[in-house]
Length: 151
Image (spheres, rainbow, N blue to C red):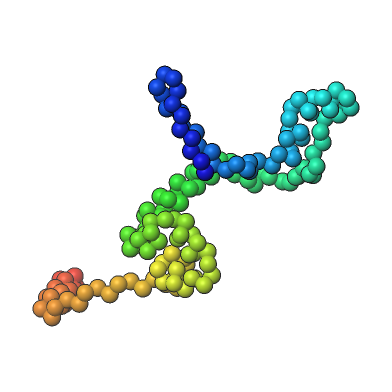
């Protein structure tokens, strides 16, 4: 890489940077894509250049358009944001990492334990045990309400 700095007669500096003396452009294609060459060949032969590859045919009716794809992305991000924060943090707040995790069969049991895919039932957290006084109070209250209903 070379840098050339010159000063013009009006006092302004001109800075030129030459990155690589060799061009990375494939020059052997230049005649094939030069419009002047193409027109000259057409006037001589009456034929336009032909494709060298076969066209691709297929049924693309199931392909979604750009708008639908963007809507699916927004829906995925919305669904991801509805997950608990500890799960989002585990996947660095990136829905793509979550999808990669879920789509890997090796992670199926862990994903089921986290409640991300159906399979193993999610174990609810155990409620905190009430103190013995609260337990006695709730038992006596339930017994009193049962007696009142029977009378």
